[in-house]
Image (cartoon, rainbow, N blue to C red; front, side, top):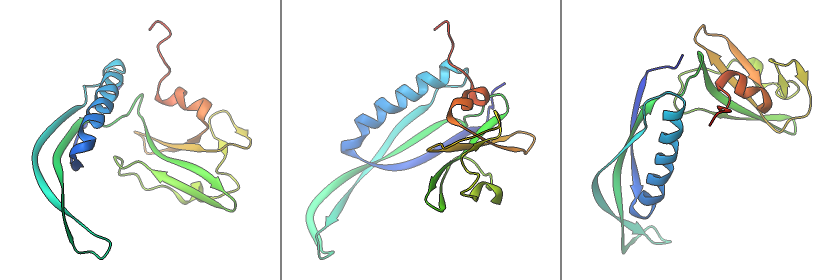
Length: 160
């Protein structure tokens, strides 16, 4: 069961990056369709030329063209689970990288450097470079290791 919530965001992209972004969005869109979701769309809109500043914050006379690019698609959620954050232990701290498309507030229990490498799915406590926090539609959270992540977000189709 996939989520059908549509998201749309507009970004200012330098002209030199529009081509590579188009290729990356096409690749992500193909993957989304393969997972049974709607394709991701990218619309390139109007542009504006922005003058660069020199090392003294003065106008340089050099302009960069920026395009307004709108990207739209479904929020990734499979089987009721959505990605919330990646946790990476660094000495006595936890580096937390949260998903920009979720409204979830990460519970404090995931900020503990002593337990941020445990997998709550397979119940294995071992040294890991990172773990992932997922949230279910019922509001529950689960911290999982990389090898268990597919049990929540989907395995590759062995027939493809």
